[in-house]
Length: 309
Image (cartoon, rainbow, N blue to C red):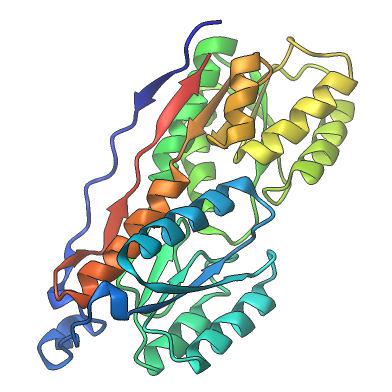
């Protein structure tokens, strides 16, 4: 078995840093941060779902670095429900956390919760997905558009120009869904023949069902891009059940443990691997930097790799 190898993707140029690590941008001078040691911090962490291995790893990254520094973390699971996430964040605000780390279910729907935190004077860091409203200290995320492009380029390489391809999209409204789709589609528009693109909500079971429907609608699919590994693994189940193993290339996104195992086994052609545990560490380190009075960049890039067999 050949060893896995990775090709590191270059991140986008970082955006300008937030002035003086404050919430108010232009009014930075009048809203200086009251500095705190990591051991003094109570961190509220709202994750979109802990039913996905990716976000379990992200949470582990937050908790690991917090434990090393003596910080208290109150973690809540939104269970992919925007209303629950809003209520969870309101509870964290009422508990008086020092800072919120939010991985939104939906980038638009999270805006009122971010604005509520702003009104309460609680800084917000978003992780993996952005907020379309309110003020945040920083967004910690991979370059999703670049990852989508990597997937399209690789499918073109292994399946050929104009190969019949379908796409399984993530949760509607999530910035990661939009950005991965844009990066993929920009290349697919000229290099591939995109037959169909449907949401499967970043879920393995939905990925299986949607792929079954696509196989019934299209008899000549050559490749699949799934916007996360969970959907990719569901698609593989559908392909295997249809007796098409080895005839359709599948590329996922995230580099989860199950996804990497599938690449090693040869059932998943490739995955655009994020590093969720590192992403969690970067987010809580940004919180420490913020309360140390340091400048925190408005976008902190988490690295990507294309993992193939």
